[in-house]
Image (cartoon, rainbow, N blue to C red; front, top):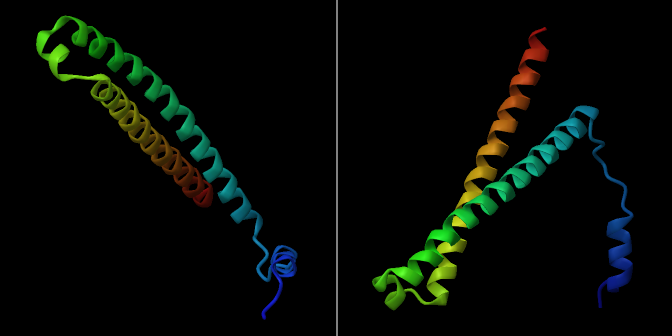
Length: 114
């Protein structure tokens, strides 16, 4: 039998939390959200630049170089461009998030010593 789904969901969603987060934890969460948003923003910028920087030479090569014309179909061209864009996004987002976290940690450490 069990508890009906709608009653169970209502109970889970309206349950009071036993642990109340401190204001410091709220600030940490807010800072981590800001770091994530900054990382996504920088990653999208980097991915769009990498997309254009990869698409132009790839498309020119496919039209002018005989080997590329014979061996790189549309799927291969799309794979080359998307692989570079995805790599640029993740590398840049990761570096930005780590740099932001490092900056936040340094700020907290300096505040504790003052």
